[in-house]
Amino acid sequence: MDRVVVEPLAWDSDFWGFPVGMVLAEPGDARGDDDVARELDRFRVVQAQVDLARAGAARELASHGFFPVDNRLEHELDLRRYYEEGEAREHAPTPPGATWLTSMERSEARAYAEQLLPQSRFNAFPVPASRIVDFYELWIEKAQAGAFDDGLLHLKIDGASAGFASTRLRDGVLTMGLIGVDTAFRGGGVFELLLDAMLAGARRDGARSVTMTTEGINLAARRSFARHGFRLTRDRLWMYRIR
Picture 1 (cartoon, helix red, strand yellow):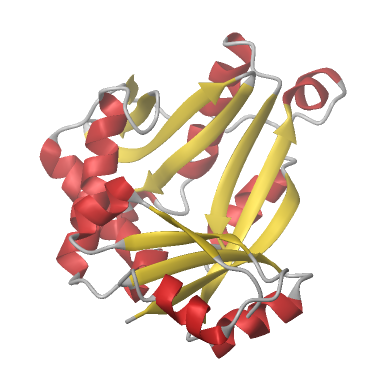
Picture 2 (spheres, one colour):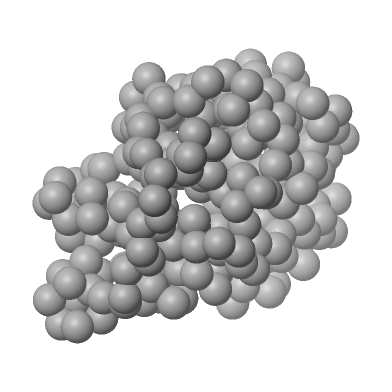
């Protein structure tokens, strides 16, 4: 491999209990294989994101023990066009008994964390599934407190938790963090309700655009974003090296 720079991820390393790093520089400048191995072996898990157009970089990483995990798809919606140029789709009707909250009970957060597990890229980490559930539960709890993300939207219908989403606003760009629909409400338009609410909130807060990252495996979310006018802006491959 040519040149490799791996950034230590302090928070991730502390949470998972072993050294985790992220490749910052992909192959580019000549460097010996022994140097590369020493750099990579400082970490239990090394993550990399490779643009699909750079097949050579993916092959180089694979030669040093990296394997593909999933695609990282970045989507973007121009809010001005969405609302002012007629791109806005018909809004999902709000069902009777719907209530919007900015928090949820810990048991609800745990239930959503468990539902997020099957499509998580962290399933490739050398940790038990329960620890990955802990990660998503912590993310939801932090979002409610304004950490990780700025806040949480929580939809209840007739007193039952139906779905949630976390968001953060930076420099006119609203980024969606986590989004989930309870299994009992899937296929009933809850995902669209959450998206509509987030877009309306983004507009009120003066956001110019909305971005969302999904894993390639999450086909339902990708279809819903496309229906709302999101366009795919970048497609990268997650690759891991685990020792």
